[in-house]
Image (cartoon, rainbow, N blue to C red; front, side, top):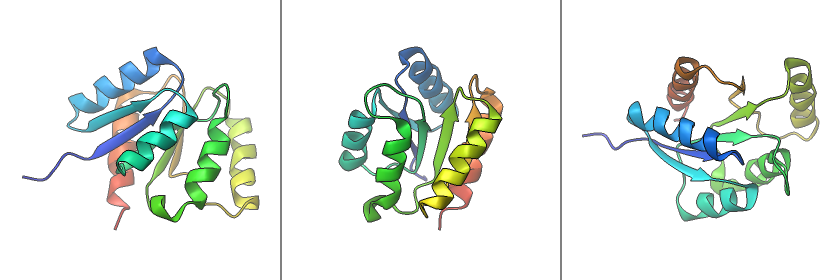
Length: 132
């Protein structure tokens, strides 16, 4: 039997993390939750997830800075990162340029909140298909 794939959800909104973890667990994933970027790094260091769902806009240390840190750390190379954000598409374009300018791994996908549940599950599955 194949082991369940793990998804690390990093988002500062408890209602969102509960919703996402329940959704993913209902589809056979193991969901782990971090409520801020610092906790997200701690969870990453405890156990390498198969996929990361990352909110960009969080208080304290932003999701953008956490993305940079993850992308530059060889221990986490190859983990697909799916960006979840409440910002509109034209702002997402700015973030895409930002990641390219910094020569960072690009996120696998950007999903706008509120996220469509079936789309999220499909994107998580698609991201796993790209991992070698």
